[in-house]
Length: 474
Image: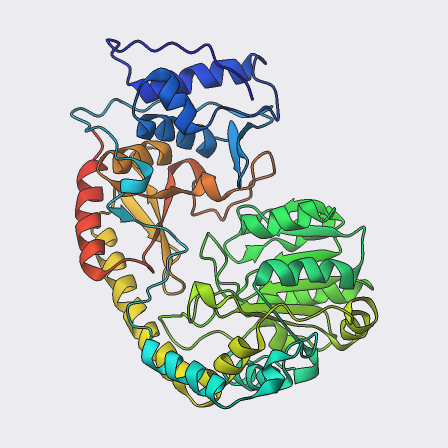
């Protein structure tokens, strides 16, 4: 870990976090901080400088948002490769800006990953679990089938067909503890030496998993309809990871024509597959939920992945993967010896929750509840025009807000943080050092992402009033 010879000027007109930011940028650009070098933790640097930890957090957040450093889970902050990066100059100084709130003291967090648990039927879930254990079902304490219990797979197959149009048999479904496990399992099923195409921005966790598994990563541009086929073809990839029902984080919904183009791309060469991540396909607020791309697959080229983390609760940690028949044969030969990663008691509880109609009733209730939040956000932000444009509407649990009056996303984030509100820049959700190909209506350096799933309606109203006030350009 690098020891920093950093000295602050308390009497300077520049804020303390700006001094830390400027020092770090200079050290990285001049090569005195090397690529991959570990930085001091925010706590240790704050203690060394005798300042608030929130000030260091703010500087590190800005450095991370602009791609100078990256955070590695449980390891700390590390210097990124910065060739080709352009430093964003500070916007016109905003007068009377309060001291930023510490990360742990944000009053309102517009996380795009938030889930509202206030309406969850805890009594029903508790009763089902209790009855499952009271029935003395000894088989639930045995390892079970590697794919997951057949009864739950049958229930999921019926649900997917009725709700998402997925065509599959229970024998094609694999149940796992989260999408991470299923994507890692997929690597052993489809083999090594693969090239995976992804949009940029995209779901960063999937990108990191594929990279860690040794896949050659190909970043492909987007247009208003999603992943561009011409760039996909030119990339040389044999896998394409897409979220056609609601692309994360841009919110693009892929029309049927582009889906068919992707299917034709997959059919054109042996060994090509589409990985369809349908992470929140249940939540659509205009019209009916759009059928999955797998529903149009007639050649066995779509690998369909879904989860109950958004629709029920993050802690459920039960996901599922639907494989084409030829890949199921590889699963049995390559991975058939593995044990299921989901408790059979949890599987039995979820099976009854879905089978007896509780899940459908809960989902309908939450769809209406999230729609209230979505409509509130949309109606308020649209009144900010022409200074701001909102996009990504009518599905999912986040919206994108683009400034049209010159305010940068990084400055929007800093101003919000000063008022105790956390927002997320679109650049934070991009794959750094890789090709960025956004739809034409989005500007990466002027767009923030506002999630509404985990916030109460009163919090949304209060937060939007504050954001409108502090985002006025002056």
